[in-house]
Length: 308
Length: 305
Image (tube, rainbow over all chains, first blue to last red):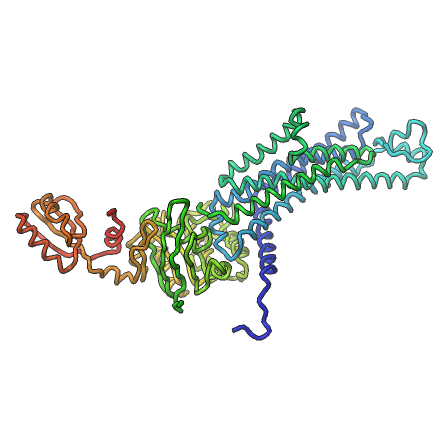
């Protein structure tokens, strides 16, 4: 008999507690697996490598019109591509490795609901995605974005600029030291726009990961799931170079916003305020992919018989 | 009405995969303290039944109760009473045995830290627990599987063919471990196996299923003391003896080779074997009752009709 005043625990709270616990377990599994640390290190190495190489190239060639923020954006977004491919593989492996290795039998015969396990896996993948985008964004900023480059191009022009404008932030500061704060403010705006771009990038990257997760839920073989997921992503990336496909289908592909956002970030790095609304439509489509992929994954995983 | 000491009970449990019925209205009871053998030929529905009990497979119909809790309605409460090893023991191969247990303890929740060392000791994996699972032998994996099943101190242990793939020495050690768990930790064990001799040795109760249907269920001793018995006869003309015996309504089976035949019949009909053979002109050199084993019973019940 229950003691007087004792309350039955609210099921939702219990479920949330279990999901949080399982998410922690999934994150530990992710870290203990070689692929996620490899993805982090590769993204870091490729991003910083690109930034250093591009910096050396622009310095040696005396290239104008390529600001230090352009270095940040270019190396960050290209470096991220490597991370995305590995993230897609991680998404595909999240469920399929448990099926191939038959560890689902061991894990699911415990006091937990399937939806809690699936939610934990999805949450851990979101954390992994954010971590990879952050690594790409921060590493490229540290190497490419923080070093003061007086020759960095500036499309922003203060009041009283000579005809034709100041070609670089250095020129503004040199001839109009009083505008230092204004330059700083302009740079702050640029940094803000680029950071917003990196935040937006999380959505299409997550869409690619979600599609991988869906394939990994539907296909029990890890090799097949990873091959299909990465293959589809790479095909969509390649299709960007086929004008007809790109024109008709491109905007509806989940990876479309990645290049669109990258272009807008590059515009921002040059001092032009980007028009995000074009990218936002693509981001909304990507969000749709996330919602549909995860919904199908959850329904399939929660209803299927585990007969591995 | 629920029997107080039934730790596991299935009532008309059925599973269909499309048009194929894997488990057909299965009703069994496993009582507290039982070491219950669940026997059947390949494809009989043993693993599907176990998968339904632990929630891996959804029953098409029927009822599962664990300690009186309806597992389909209150799954979390019911599964909390069970430690299971279904099919081949599977773990995260890149982690050590200990890390696997720590991870699974966290998945289950509420497992005190010291419990991991206790279960490692219980299954005798103290030396190997820091090695990666991918280096484990099959026997070590089986032990680790038992260890993970014991983490939450479950009153019911469900083991699906746990001795498959073990060498004779490993089987002996494993059965010794199970016996110890049942006796010392007072755990009820529900075990499926093909190894009938071993099951006969450690189980006090058993059920035999075929094509998803329950054939017999009860105390092993009483099952073996059924009225049908097997008699060994040595005859001069086995072909003629077969001809005479087969088709007789009181003969339930004729097997064997050369001049030695095994005849299954009721004890009271045994004398008719001798009479029939002598009348038929077959010299009977020997007629002796065979001590029935679980293997004999299993073969009798599951043979093709």
